[in-house]
Length: 367
Image 1: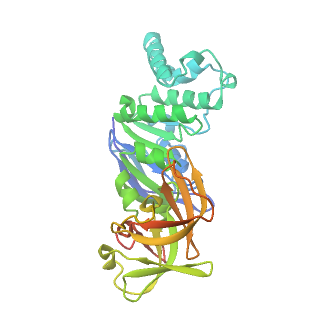
Image 2: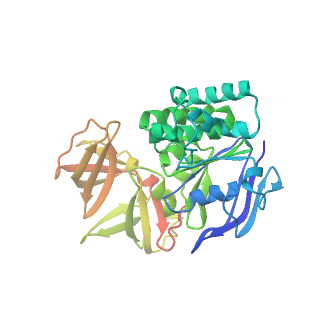
Image 3: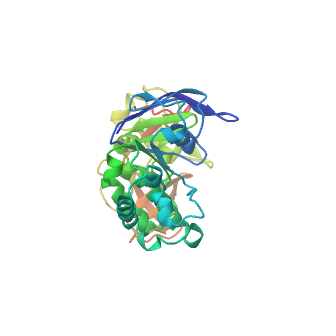
């Protein structure tokens, strides 16, 4: 087994996609890359697999430079989002194809394919061909072909994105303990932030040209280095308020739609804002805004009067959009709560959890 090292790799098409990207994934580490569609996540995997020729930089597996080595000699197994199954072979033969390429004996091949098929709940489909199974079953077949390969590196490109919610949850649970994945370096690509937070030993948020931030789930969610990262880690998305910092440095004022509202700056954040003035963006996660009953104590929160715009009960939680001073805020509530459009409410804002981003570049001002 081996660690994966990417040293300042570059890859472009009409414009740069990967620009001097460097990354090390340790043996046994499950590294998740998350980001919007079209940002270069799949290109990154294809460069590691050798399916794309680098413009510059090096790929090392187990300390060996494989940059110019063809894909079939890299001992890398990749699951494609588009399945890439052999249409003339059965599900069994598709899963078994890496083992046949290594000339595994029949008994070992059948045992291994059976184990993986049962894990993915497709053991009843082994005699069928790809055109006879659903899209989700095709994706599980493609994932099974990767799992049987026993490579040095696993590359998984959104391997469960087309599955129904119940099976996605089951497979996420399996990914935590699956020995095959936990023995080798694995890069797992997804656009689902919850999947990334659940699975990643570390997470890399992909931006234009490379990784905006790399860290643990707690680090990238609670301490995003930029507004770009904050936007892509959380659902509902973080509230973004364009603000002016008051001269005294203990308040910011958001202006929108002809109205404005002032938000207090927690004492712990004032030093980072340098006590100056200027434009910035305040980020408030919906879970840091609470709907308070009439007469409830502030408990250190800033209280603002608001009116309900939209309320959605989403099973496990409720999502409330409210307006205060011409500014819209999204908050999480109990799913059992009931709100009507126009209803007056009191919001409690946890100002010590606010995030502050520079107007230029959106870097986190609090570190």
